[in-house]
Image (cartoon, rainbow over all chains, first blue to last red; front, side, top):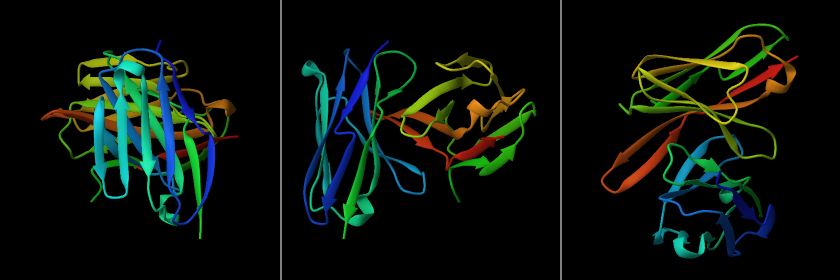
Length: 108
Length: 114
């Protein structure tokens, strides 16, 4: 089945810094989503982005489907951005496959 | 009110006990999913259902069973719980509409098997 990798596994930032999280996948996909899991465990959908670029406030995401990767950009990070960021892909099957996540800690 | 709810939110049980985790949704979505999350890992799919009569095994279905009682309800059972089923369990719905395809997660159930 499709493999999903995320890097870096852990990231520590000072508040106000920018960051880039990466998701690599091993096969073509028809769906890619980014999720944020907050420190209380809640999973929130950030982007549905099988290709192209989207922006939502301080967050943006780009997927280059032909090269099998996606990037999540966080600008001017805030402490509330802390948590784990997951990439999940669906390669024309019925289900999502999740990556292992990037744990982000934003320090005040 | 939350669109996807899970009960209980926390449960401690003993090895060999039967446990049921319940999920309800008010979103009207046909597709529902059960995942488990282990520390430091992503989510892994246990079972999924596309409608009341369509239930399918996921990546890690051994030791689990499910019931789709209605469009809005999808329950996960552990027939005889074992310690390595200690994990965080999530229910989710999925909706494809207008060029988007999104999953919506419940708050999770933290299960500890002693």
